[in-house]
Image 1 (cartoon, rainbow, N blue to C red):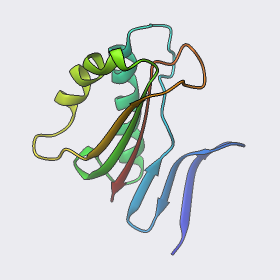
Image 2 (tube, rainbow, N blue to C red; image 1 turned 135 degrees about the horizontal axis):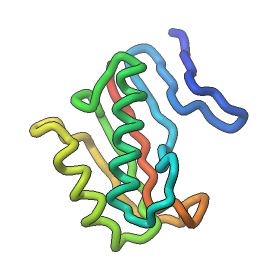
Image 3 (cartoon, helix red, strand yellow; image 1 turned 45 degrees about the vertical axis):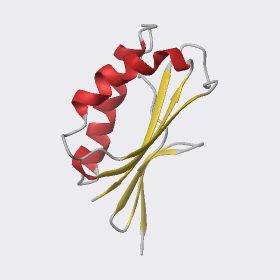
Image 4 (spheres, rainbow, N blue to C red; image 1 turned 120 degrees about the vertical axis):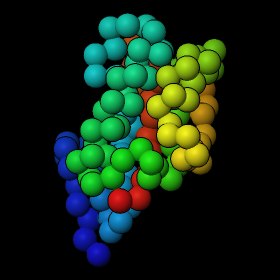
Amino acid sequence: MTVERKHVGPRLSELVIHGDTVYTAGIVARDPVSDDPAAQTRDILAQIDSLLAEAGSDKTKILSATIWLADISYYDALNSVWDPWVPKGQSPARACVESKLARPKYKVEIRVIAAR
C-alpha cells in the first residue's frame, strides 16, 4: 500500500493517507489572535473539514479524535463548538486532555483519524 503525504513540511505532514485511512497532524488555529478557545475550535474544525475533503473523506467518517486543551477549563467552550459540529450518531472515539501546547497563544489542538 502506498502512503500519500500532503502539505509536507520539514517537521510534519498535515495530512497522511494510507489505504483507506486518513490521519491529520495536530491542528491549531491559523491565526490565534483571539484568546477565545471556542473561536480557535471553530477555526480548527473548519481546517479539519477541508483536510478531510481533500482526502476524499468527511467528518461522518472520523474514527477517533485527540484533543489537547491548554487549560481544562476550556472544556465547555470546546464542546459548545464540537457538539453541533459532530453529526448526530457519528461521534468518534475521543480523548480530551489538558496539556501545555507548543505556543502560549494556542488554546486548543485537535488531531483526527478518519476512514475514506
